[in-house]
Each structure stands twice: as C-alpha cells, then as structure tokens.
Image 1 (cartoon, rainbow, N blue to C red):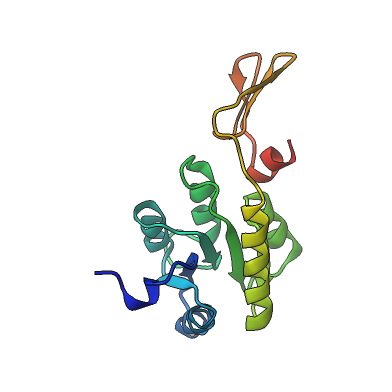
Image 2: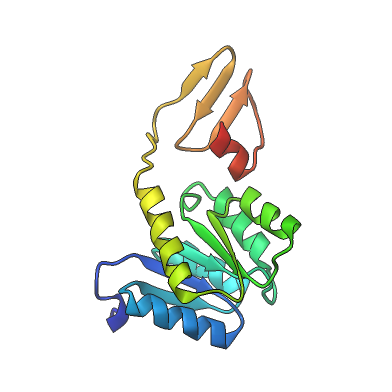
Length: 173
C-alpha cells in the first residue's frame, strides 16, 4: 500500500539526516509544499533507498553515522542509473574546503545549517527547474581527434583509454 503522503504526483525527496529535529523540520516543510518524502538516518539507509525506490532529489547531511554523506554522494554519482539524481547537501560543515569538496563530488547545491526553510524550498525548486531543462541523449557518442564522449553514460575515452573524472569535471566537458 502506498503511504498517503506519496499519493500525489509531486517529486519525491529523500531526506538524509541523523538529527531528528532537522529531519522533522525539513519533512514538515516539504510535505506542506506537496512534495513526497522518505527519510534515512544513516548513509547505509540512504543508499538502500536510492537503490530500491524512486527518488527525484536527495537532501544529504555530511556527518552521518556509518557511511558519511560524502561517500553517499560518491556512490550515487558513480552509479550510471542513479547519477542524474540531484543532491543538495544540507550540513553544519560550512568550511570552504567542505563546500568545494561537496560540489566537486556532484552536489547541485550546498546549504549550511542553520537555514531558512523558505530558502531551502526555493533552492529545491531551482534545482528541479535546472534539471528539467537538461535533456541528455543517452545513445549519442561524440568523436573528435581520438576523444570519445558518451554523455548518457558519462564516459570519456582518449585513444580508447577511459578517463576518470569527477562529476563536476564531466559537467564542464
């Protein structure tokens, strides 16, 4: 049976945070805006939900018990079937290096705690708008002077050898 809060057709957001107060605040505001929500309190739970359920966006804390948020983001962005899921990092870690690392791993946005629920909702809507305007041809492979780029699979090869790139590096190319 489908939970009542999932009965509408609005986007489904996974909230990953081990702080119950933050989890409830974010869930309440998302549900009030009509979004479907599912919650996880550990990185392992988050990865399990991403693998088994439909998720349209992940709100991800970095400091989690077990697998931390950075590892969760890496795992999602390395999975060809899940890498297009947008990630917004929502965390107390606001140092420049944390923000840069999060964005380089593929986060679409980075919000530090404490935050305004209205600003969070606006940023979520902006990410959904941005992603709805991006369509990727999953079958086309581009070839130029020994370089092959497969946008749908996020694979780049130079003279037949694969090149490992971060999510952000691939986006730039």
